[in-house]
Image (cartoon, rainbow, N blue to C red):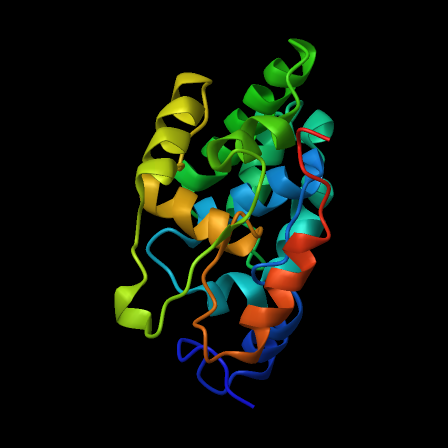
Length: 197
């Protein structure tokens, strides 16, 4: 069974690749949670974030934006002292700010999921890379997404972070063609209702 070569032999990473990475996610709150985790990954490996994911879920109230937006200075200090997460002041402050930006969008009647998926016209892009070397770190779509999110008050959403996010939530299928998940993820995408329907 062939897999994408970026995995190594970490069992948690193998499970993530085989079960989650590239599976289309449409709902607002799961997308918000994934974007926050991808922001925390900046400069780190995904294996670190994956190992601490349960700690993040606990520390950030399962990434509930309504709760996060009300975090006090005391709660922020507790987060900075929490060894179960990545204790980076800027990233913690950004996560809280992003919760507030998410709520502003929701209060304005904007679906976070629809907003994000619009950058791929609502349909997962099926790439056909034959090697990891050909997979880009950023694309015009991720650059536009980054700019739009920043304009709405989000932080730690640069074009590279946005592209990693797009890969993870199935907006693009970047499993290499030899990987057994490439075909499976393509089938999952084909079952999604078209946004025009």
